[in-house]
Length: 307
Image 1 (tube, rainbow, N blue to C red):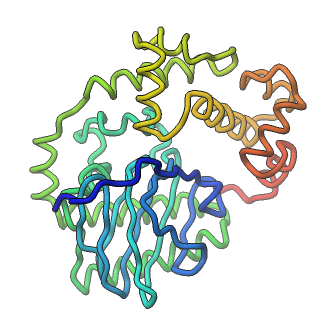
Image 2: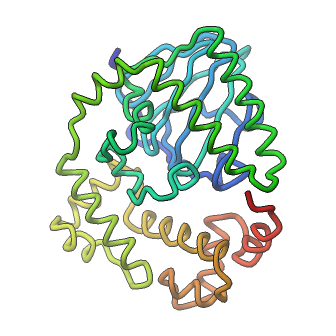
């Protein structure tokens, strides 16, 4: 059903570095982190699994049941909350878009525009507002087994672990698609595709992505997207809960993390590629955003075993 109460006008958006121990994938059971009790967004995908305890989930503009043997599939930047009762048992799986779809070159804000014929595995995330993903005892026993496997693989992170984790997450999504095939296909046929606002955001995000090494201003980005600066500022606040400066900083930090973990470029070279002319200022901003210095981030990544 649709929610009869409006959401707070200010909704916080969380990054993986705030709610996970790894930047690509993480899994935890209840109690591992402070529970979020207010509607919020996050910049990554999430699957919540209800084990014990009856509740409900508010997602987008809908309120749907969430209890034992229920799964919730949360798309990046979708406002949601599941207020778990004190006795509840549940599991949360968080992952970055590139973890599961490394070749999907679509910004998280444009996932609504992806063809489901090409990526049917996005359907549970796109249509969670309209479909209840409840499983029978046999199916849920399989899911519980997969969660235990994910937890063990994530803890060890040995050679090939990431490949195995991707496969398990795909099995969970695949099972949800098979069990709710009729409902998901019905929603898919009603899928509206692009809207003018999504088109505008896509142009802005493409402009930012292609010019991260250059000075970026709200005025220039708005002109590139054929918008007024005021309209763009309001659109970003409405859709992402970010200012233009915050959005640019986030994308620059993501680019910096990618370069630090996948290249041998010097920190000052990475700073320049991310739009910072002053290496010291880049170091300060990176530490404020990520919680550690660029060099320590690189060392910690190098210390991990690739999967």
